[in-house]
Image (cartoon, rainbow, N blue to C red; front, top):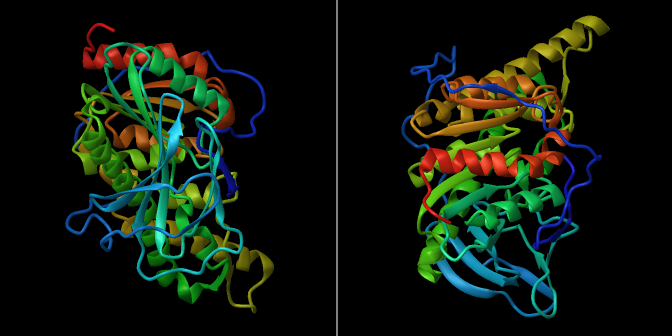
Length: 396
């Protein structure tokens, strides 16, 4: 999975091709209760991974002022990284136990704001770290708050444009990135024998749940901080928009914060082990060793069978996968934007999410993942219209 090592917290971009997508097929909302999900079971007790009491994360300031330590909010420590146009940039950190090996190349955060830019190296040995930018509505009276859960590529120019249009429509927007060590992928063994299948499935489920939970923990902390900092940030309606990896974390967030007035999934899916193993991004391709006495074709089938079993076991052991939580969220007005030929979040996993959510309204486009996001600015007004219709937002 590509990892951007330099984040412009003023919302920098991904590398995308040019193009747009405006043609859509609409699947009208057709709520279905009690969706059957085969052998997948719903989680019960112990939904959330435990987190030790948060402490101040480690960092090195390479340029600019020290971040301001705002203390603990819920399960995370919040640091104000600096002011940006129309808002504020935040570092949100929770402690990890046990510590992990520090990366050779630390994550560098660049905050482009008023005056001198900030440049900070963030350490992830003892902390999981999430980044947030909160921007104010462009109207005198905000309609409410949009929580925008970003993708692993952070925020592209197209997403910036999408967010600005929501601001112009009267929405405060809190953009939350995934944890900067998403999935802890570099700690997954790339080669193991099939007798390690159970162990690897447990590890995979644990790492996925930690990622999904981290987005929920961090966002709940940002909301608590904003409520204390200025109530105007959080007054009014609340809408959660999940984009790509952010869409995977959306059901967990909705569960954690007790729902929202509306939810939108852009390029999302369910069954995260399937996505991780089948995405065209080549996120995780384990080399599973089998009996060396087998023929080449038999060994290939054996490895494929082991990988299929890995998906099944990891999904069963995950508690926060969208496929488990989505059926409990069918009372929330929901919209999906899906690419019909998506290979990054495979289209069939988008169908799984659609059915798990109870078949909400869905706009389908004859494009892949990247073009779906390239066309996002053209969908902003339609999305805002849909949001405001569903929540009955008042005058601007």
